[in-house]
Image (cartoon, rainbow, N blue to C red; front, side, top):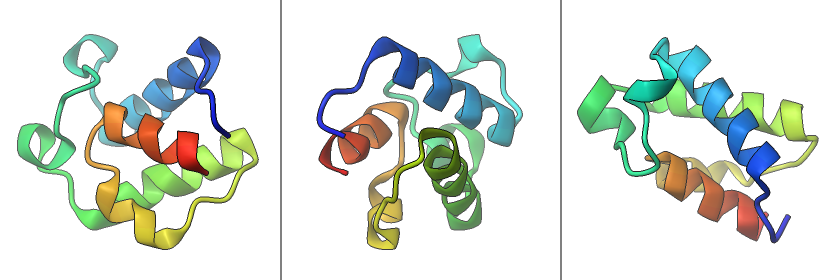
Length: 80
């Protein structure tokens, strides 16, 4: 994917907010999902799957462990 546009960032943030059931303002690029919201690995997989479906991309399942914040998700997507 290489470049993460503002539109992609917005889509990803909305997906994460919806799945974690948090408000947009509660989530920053550096918010650590597990520490700040008690998110487990199943929720991360759900986020990854929803992103794949929305953006029509495939992310290696092994990358899920890296997807701990919005910034980390953007980094993974840039490498996808």
